[in-house]
Image 1 (cartoon, helix red, strand yellow):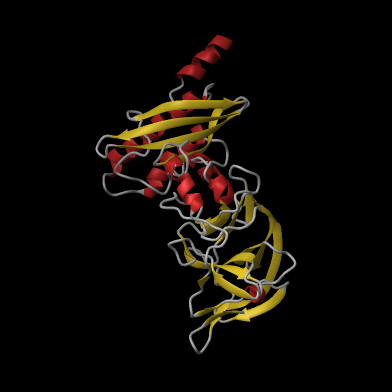
Image 2 (spheres, rainbow, N blue to C red):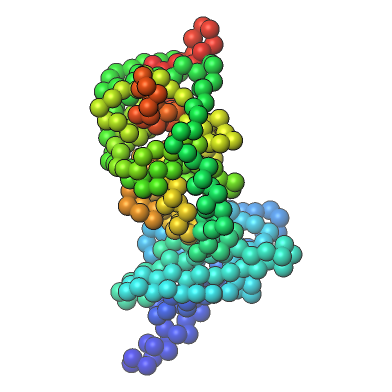
Length: 365
C-alpha cells in the first residue's frame, strides 16, 4: 500500500501531496500556466474575471496553505506571470518545516531578469504548500543599496549640518499635535478623540537616519543631512479615527521643542513622497546590510496589521513604520529644537490635524 501511495504522491499532475519544496513550486508554476493558457484561448482579449477567478481558485486551493493565494485573481496579462518554460529554480533553502525556493525568469525580449521567491510550509499529511510569493526585479539576496555606495551615503550625514527653514506657509506645531488624549473637531473631519501613544524605543547605532516609503525599491537614496547621537529613543504617535496624524522620535524625553526646522536630506526639502501608504524612520547604517527579499518580507508582514510599530531590519527595533495619514501623497518632517538649537525630536506630520487660516497659513490644531 505504501508503494501505491508514494507512486501517486510523485505522479499526481499538480501534486495534492508533494514531498519537496521544489516539487511544489514546479507544480504550482505548471498549474498556473495551464490555467492561464486555457483562459487565454477561451477569452482572447475580452477578459472574463469570473471565469479566470474560478480557474485560479483551483490553483490556489491545490498549492497554497489556507488563507494564502497567488494574488492573481484580479489580474490577467497578455504575458504569463508564471511560465515553466522560462522560470528556473536557482536555489532552495530548508529549515525544518519552512523553506524558500528562489527562481529566475529571463525575458529574452527585454534582455533582463525578474525573480520570484516562494516561501513554503510543510503541513502534516498535506506536504509542502506555498505560504507567500515575492516578486522582485533585482536578485533577491542583493543589498537594497549597492555596496559601493554605502560609505558615500553615510558620509552625507553630519552632526553639525546647517538647519533648513521650513516653508513659509507652514506653521505646524509639534507640541499642539502631540497632546494627551483630547476631543477635537476640524473642518472636513468628524469630531473624534485624538490619542497620544508610545509604541516603544527606536534603536539607532550609526546616528544616521533615513525617511522613506518602505514599500518601494530604493533609488538614489540620501539620509537626513543632520546626524544624531546613537541611542535608544522613545517613539510616539497621535491617532484619530484610526488614522495616524503624526509620528515622532524623542531624543530628549524631558524637554519640549520650541522651534522647528525641515528634516531635509542634502538635496531635499524635508518633504517625503508616499506611494504605498507608509513612511518609515530608520537607522541608515542598518539599512545598508538589508537584502531586497528581507526588506520585502518585513514590509509584507507589516502590511497584515498596518499599525505603527517597530521593525527589525538587521538589528533589533532599528526601524519604525507608520501608515501615512489619508494615504499616498507627500508629507513634511521636522527637527524639533530647544532654545539652544539642540535637536530634541524628529517628527512627521501626516496633515490630518491641520487647518488653513485666512492668511493662507497651514497650522496645527
